[in-house]
Amino acid sequence: MSLLEVSGLTVGVEHSPHALLRDVDFTVEAGQIMGLVGESGSGKTMSALAIMDLLPAGIERRAGTVRLDGRDLVAQDRETVDRNANDMTMIFQHPRSALNPTMRVGRQIGRALEINQDMGRAAARSRATEMLNHVGIPGADRVARAYPHQLSGGMCQRVMIAMALACRPRVLIADEPTTALDVTIQAQIFDLINDLVEETGCGVLFITHDLGAIAEMCDRVTVLYGGQVMETGDVRQVFTDSRHPYTQFLFDAVVREADPSVEEKDVNFALQGCRFGHRCPYAFDACAEFPLLREVDTGHLTSCFLHQKENALGSA
Amino acid sequence: MALLEVRDLHKSFGHGRTLTPAVRGVDLEVDRGETLGLVGESGCGKTTLGRVVVGLQEPSSGAIYFDGELLDGKMSRPEYRRRVQMVFQHPAQSLNRRMRVDTTLAEPLRLLKVAPRDEVAGRIDEVMRLVGMGPDYLKRRPGQLSGGQQQRIAIARALMPGPDLVVLDEPTSSLDQSVRGRIIALLRSIQEEQDVAYVFISHDLSTVRRIADRVAVMYLGRIVEIAPTEQVFKDPQHPYTKALLSAVPSMDLDNRGSRIILAGETPSPSDVPVGCSFQDRCPLVHERCGLEEPRLVSLGDGRKVECFAVTDPN
Image (tube, rainbow over all chains, first blue to last red; front, side, top):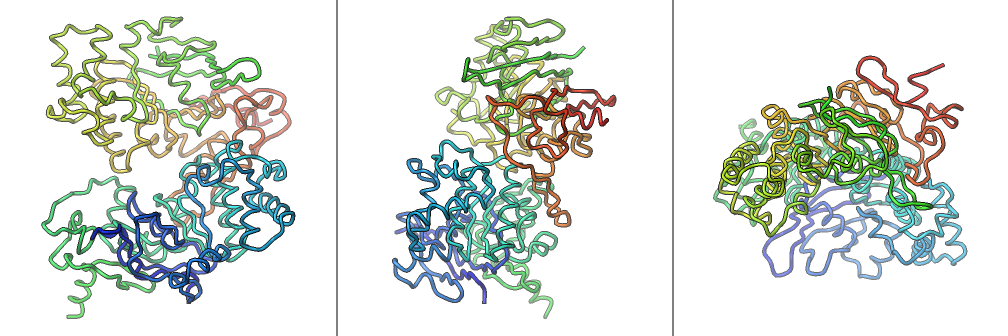
C-alpha cells in the first residue's frame, strides 16, 4: 500500500463544464520523492491544493479519492482534515507571502506545534528554535525573533520548511520551493530536503517546472498537461524511454529546442478526449475519447492511445 | 581597440551609514560585434553595471571609454545614446502600452534626431524584418501582443537608431522556454547582419552559454572570472564559478548529487568583508584572503581570475 494515493481526482470550476484536473492518479511512497512536472497552468499546484483540501472558493472537487495509508481523507469531515497537519504539510512557492508578516517567525512555527501537537507555549518556543537550527539557520535564537521581512528569501524558505516539518508529517508537499531563489541557495534547499527524507522517511511530492530539478531530486515523476496525467513512472524510465508524445515534446523543447508544430484539429479537446490532442502530431480518431492511464512497462504508465493501438496491433 | 572599455568602475547607492556599493571596481572590454555574457546571482551588481554603461546611472568613480573616447559626463549626449541602447527584462513594462508599435519604433529617431522624417518608415520596415515580424503588427498596441512578440518589439526599438552596443538585461527571463530559444536565435542572426555588440545580463547560465562569446561572472559587485564561454563552462577556475555551475540542476541522471553546496548566503553589499568578498563561503579560503583583496589576474589564454588560490597557489 502506498503512503499517499491519489486516484481519479477531478477538479473543476463551479457551474462550468471545463475540468481543471481530469482523472488524476499518482502515488507517493514513504522515503521517496515523487516529482510533479508540467508547464504553467498544467494543474500542478491545483493537484496539491486539492490534496491539502485548500482549493480556492469557486473551485470544486468533483470526483476522486485521496488516501493516506489507506485512510480516505476526502470522506472525512472538515475538522478531521484540519488535524491532518500532523500527517501532511505543504511548503509554498513564495515563502515571504506564505508567512505572516506581522508575526515573528519563531512564534509562527510555535503556533503550528501548539495547534497540532497540543504543546504548551514555552515548549513550542524551544522546539521552534530547535527546528530552525535543524534546517541550517545560523543563530536560530536570533532568527526566531525576526519578522519575515528581515530575512532573505532563502532564509524564509528555510523557515517554511522548518514549520512544515515541525510536526513531523508523513507527507511533505513542496510546491516549486526554490523557484524564487538563486541557484546556489536552491542547491542548499535541495540538499536539505534530501537529508530530511533520509532522516525521517517521509514521502515528498515535489512540484516543479524544471526537468533538471526532477532529474536531481526525484525517484519517480508524473508529467501533467492540461490537468491530465500524461505519463508516470520511474525517473529513469520517463527520461530515457518516454512514451507519451507530450513528454517527448517537453524534452525536445528543453533539450533540443524544437518548435512544436501546432495543428488545429476539429475535436474540442478541452471538453473531451486527450488534452494534448490539438497539439499532438500523432492524434487520430480514438483521441476524441479520454485516454486512461495504461501500464507500458513495470511501474511506467502513460495515457496515450498510440501505445494502446500499438499494443493491440502487436497482439493481433 | 575595444568598442567599450570600463576601468575601475564603482557605483554606490546611499551615503554615510546606508552606503551600499553595488559595483566595486570593475574592469572589462567589449569588442565590436561581440557578445559578453554577464552572470551572477541577485544583488551581485550586474544590472547596475549594465545601467551605468548605458548611461541610465552616473558612475561614482572610474572611467568608461567608448570607441576610444573617454566618456566623462558625455553619456547623455544624443550621439552616445544613439550608439548604446538597452533592452529590459519585462517588455510589458518597458513599452508604453498606449502607444502603437509604429509610434514606439519611431520614438527613438524622433527624440535623438538622427534620421530625417522621410527615412523613418523605411527604417521601421527594416527593423521589423530583422525581428521577424510582419507589417500588420505595426498598428497594434502592446496589449495585443504576446510576451515574446512584445520583447521582439522592445529589441526592434533598441535597434532603430542603429546602435553599436545593446545592453540586454535579462531579456528572456520572463519568457517561456520555447519562446526563449527563438529570441536567442533572433539576437544571434541580428548580430551577424548588423555587427552589433551585446552585453547580455542574465542569471540563467544555460541561456548565456547559447549566446555569449565571453562570460564575466560577478559576485558582490566584482568580476571574479572572465573568459571565453566554453572555457568558463568546461573548465571554471574561480571557486564561486565552480559552485555556481554545479548548482544548476542538470538532466543527467548519472551525475546526481555532484553539486558543490556553498555554506551560507551572499553577504549584504553594505557589509562586505575585508579582503576577498567570497572568503566566508569559499572552500579554498586561507589566511591571505582575509588580509588582502585579490585582483583579476590574467592566466594568459584570454582568461582572468580573481582568486589567490588559482593565480598564486604558493
